[in-house]
Image 1 (cartoon, rainbow, N blue to C red):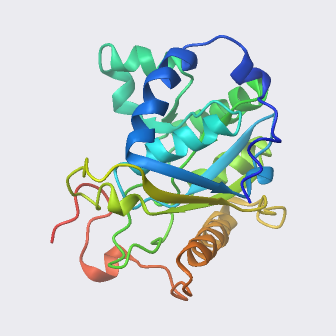
Image 2 (cartoon, helix red, strand yellow):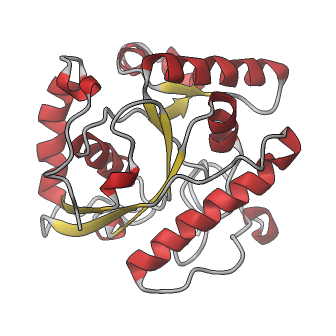
Length: 251
């Protein structure tokens, strides 16, 4: 059940912004490649800040979640690598659209940055899309691998709801680290959102890893529903398979 027609666009979508011309380009372009079916739309808040946490298995799936979020009435904002904000033109575009720079590794400066990011999201009532895995999954069958703590740290600091999400079908448009397939168009892609995850028992920093495991389990469960399969009981750990967690996956 899509329930798209019964959702009312939020104020951030109704208010003129840089997202309007971007949507005029991106939505039809993505529509050529994908026919997106959205389920669980009622779980995305119509107003206020939130963290949307999806699975990540294709370099194309951020576009799918950007369009899905826009169709659900919210402006799609992502966590982006801090270095991208220093690139001329691109950095200005990221700042203009309210994208959130990824904090560096666990340092005092990173903690302060996360606090500032959370406050800004709450103050402006913005949502942000955060991939807990940090990069494309290394799991051979495209199940979610183990996650990083950035999403839950941001959510706990800002007291933001974490909305788990999963998509399936994007691998037919662009395989993991593969080439974009232009034909045939309009491949079926399903997006499923789940209820907000209760992280009230994971407030201490020592529990961030456990909270992340919970989030990843929920994402894997949603993906299992889309695939009609049971997800692996344990998340894939790249370190146990001599794999790097960033950069292109070596075959």
